[in-house]
Length: 118
Image: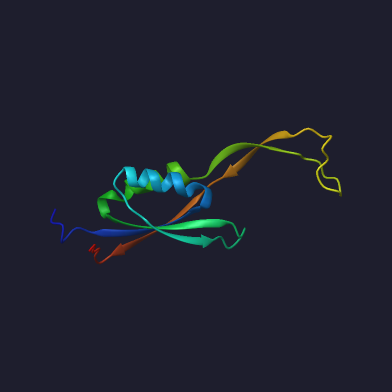
């Protein structure tokens, strides 16, 4: 396939800030590079990162797999004091393990006319 004629994609991936280092590291190790923009989530107002990743069309699934693996929604065990007392957590009540859903990535995939690097 001629490089000039191959189709190109721009992936905009919005990930949680905590997932950013491992995600970018894995992308770089596999030969993909991202421009990183700091962003803030609209609903929970949490720190997030927006990755701009330009790739050839045939590489799109490989990038999506990395994003899902490193930043996708997953279950994580955490410990919480579940007391509902008006004064806040009660230290005499032991911490209980709780499964929480963490992570998550939203990916926008767009067709590109061209990618140029200088």
